[in-house]
Image 1 (cartoon, protein in one colour):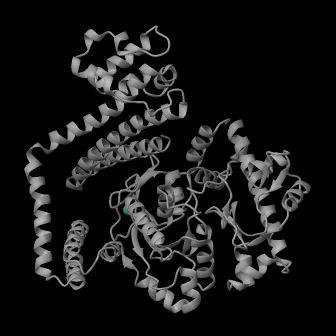
Image 2 (cartoon, protein in one colour):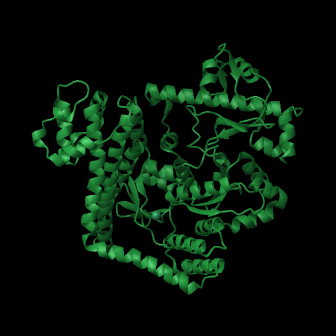
Image 3 (cartoon, protein in one colour):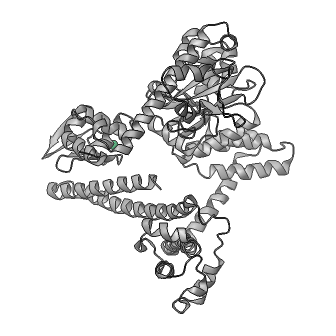
Amino acid sequence: MNDLKDVIEEVKIRNDISEVISDYIQIRPSGSNYKALCPFHNEKTPSFHISTAKQIYKCFGCGEGGDVISFIMKVENLDFMDAVKFLANRCGIQVNTNIDEETKKKLEKTKRFQEIHVVAARFFYTNLMQKNNPGYKYLIKRGLDEKTIKSFGLGYSMDSWEALKNYLLSSGFTIEELKECGLVGQSKKNNNFYDKFRNRVMFPIFDYKGNVIGFGGRVLDDSLPKYLNSEDTLIFNKRYNLYGLNFARKYMGNSRTLILVEGYMDLISLYQYGIKNVVATLGTALTDAQAQLIKKFADNVVLSYDSDQAGLNASLRAIKILEGAKLKARVLDLGKSKDPDEFVRANGLDKMMKKIEGASEAVKFKIDTLYRACDQSNQEEVIEFLQKAVNILNYIESPIELDFYIKYLSKLTKIAPEVIRSELKISRNQKTSKENFKKPEFKKLKKEKIEKENTFIEINLVKLMMISEKAREIVPLKVGIEEIIDENNKKVYSEVLTSNKMGMITIKDLNTDIFGVDYLRKLDAVDLSNIDFNDVHEINKIINRLLKFNSEEKIKKLSKEQKVLEDRRRTIKDNKKEAEEVDLEIMKIALEIVSENKKMKSF
Ligand SMILES: [Zn+2]
């Protein structure tokens, strides 16, 4: 067992899936397999199946499925490596000794960097608790008590260029390590090393497992930047982590609701008042990766950003990202308070809880924001507003909800609900009549569109191969000719690879007889002037776009097959043998989808 692959195999062999699952839920034998009530959705009759022969599970209610590792990832909220370690532990395999050298080195370095951050955090905390420093005075003035300061490990970086550096060096870390962790910088003038965080209140940033991975430091005067965050390192990436998630994940409750704020102080303040299911972004706008991280733990997000225009815009952007991740978003309106910290300190816990309960649905928030932005005394603008609002309502499916918002719009604009309703009808009819009109040709149209999009990425790729020698080296390693669909693009692909010409290959160098004029014109028109042809990263970007597109198409196809099988499964309930066979087929496809999804994450 020298590499990770072997460890994973061994972990799977030694952890029988039915045994592992029965640690969490009651399972009942069903033939040679098992059935259970699904742990991932609410149900009264068991649709959760475990196949002991294949060592996989599948729920026919909610669609969850996979192997023993994916089960642990889901049920224990762990990422892939942690789930492997968890299972390795369960059956007594030592993981660290069994992985390849490179991974081992990276893990060791990760551990070392985390140690540095722990030692640094303790140093900052000890500084702070000397109490006769501006950091301590600031936090007490902001209303924090010592218990909260301790829970979050808050600290103070002294007004010194070397205090932290000297302390960490004396603790046995090297200057290179400190530099790589972003805690010290190096002067360009004299090459001296210096502390980056000076005279700031220090907020250790934890990952969701509770490891210190970075710091945020707030100034104590008006100097800029107000907040200085650790730069991205081996262990820290601001776009992939959320402040406070290590605490919040334990306080999500059955409602699986998270409150999302902009500032560390907002979060800590709410926490001290007893609202603990709160996370904060790390000085950037909310990212898709963060939304995916939230999705691991929550279904609902209440946004509580600053009340100014910037906060409003940030909320609108965040809603879009949250909805894209299929999370339900609501928005807090804190009236005249500028942020949640100020509100909770002025009004207390009860009023804050009421605000959270009464948070606006995303739809209402969007409508309100639009309405506030228009000149309400100008009839034309109100009508324009109404048309935009109707567009938002077009996406509501529930008739009750729709009725609610029609009345709401009517109240806002003093336009009769019937008028709004008919406006909505027109708009919906337009939508459906367009769809009806297209219906007979819909399938064809869609196929054409897919091919077009694909051809577009492909033609960019082959053109790039013509221009760049580097691309001719890299592309064939990642994209086989069988991944190219369009015949013309295929021909170019193989022509450039067999060409003896060095440097740029022009259209004239191709065997033009085998292409139509239209295609050559298209190829000629492909403009790649915004790409650095020798930058491997840029070349990979185009490659990955194509691979991702192909993967997505494959997943779509598999999902369709799966659905057909699931429909069939429902009709053959009584034929046990056939049912079992279909179940296996479904599970196989589910696994293929899982692995295709995993592949896609690497693009
Ligand atoms: Zn289920």
